[in-house]
Image (tube, rainbow over all chains, first blue to last red):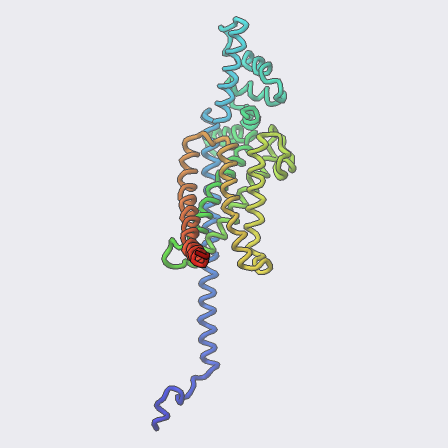
Length: 140
Length: 207
């Protein structure tokens, strides 16, 4: 009788039932982990897409409103070059025209490509069809 | 469709059309900077002693953010290929010192990308590499991240803009702080053992 009270002498639970329980618990835990993982991945993907869209919008608004750093830097550079050239030649009255700034820029920056020059000339005249990428190459 | 909507859509298409790749590249680059910084933050929180208990979701978040970063960098580089004004080749955006445009900054970005790609994807081969060796290698990801920041600040078109600097500060400074905590923390933890060795060594000196 005394022996039957000890834990070792107690009849062992059905191993198959215990295994089934353990398996079910493990399966549910694994499923929960998989669900959580999928949720996190989806959230990160959604956040990434939203971030990209938001930044795209910011850059676009900057570009459309004429406050693009590349464009403004180039127009500053172009106008400075135009002023320098025209002041040396004595034509200060027409220094701000786009044709002037373009030609003066092409003379001051001889290493730049012709396509970049034409687009930066447009940007200096304030037209929205100029390429910011071409302008960026110029601001280097 | 209302005329105003048509007008707006037409305006957007006209405005974005020629600059689509260029704007997309800039947006993807900025997104990559944010994602990588947050990923570094999460990684440092995960492995460091900042948090009291380990969060199982942090590993998944870190992994997802890292993959998103690699995707954003890939978009950042590949969209530049479509830009008709820069006329970059695949070699220009993938091989260091090939591009003639701001060569050093571009090279910094290219090296940062390859390092991030190799070190990030090595996670899936850590069984072959060995976990200890992989952990040692993974520390260099922080250097790749710093190189990426250098690239964005040195070459980024928006680098001088207030919004870009504010955004960079918000995501980069916490990660840098955690990195410093990790470096100094590990240095402090390893110092007592070193000092003990030194003292032990000195005590053994004759005289």
